[in-house]
Image (cartoon, rainbow, N blue to C red):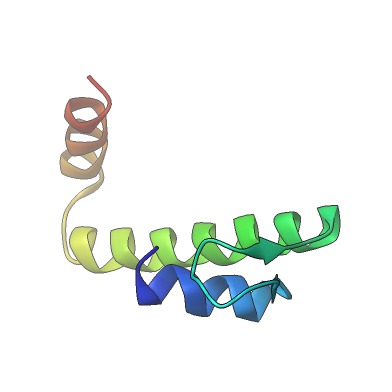
Length: 67
């Protein structure tokens, strides 16, 4: 797991069980928070990528990306 994901998991309330990056415990509410944190980060990435583009260009890029 990369450091960015570890930081997001901690922010969402996940707790470490062991000494490795693979041993984590969480509750359903933590998973929902984690999903929201990831979605926000993704939105910010897209905002930067699409900044200054016209609406048609953004729609076209999204369609190409989803093929």
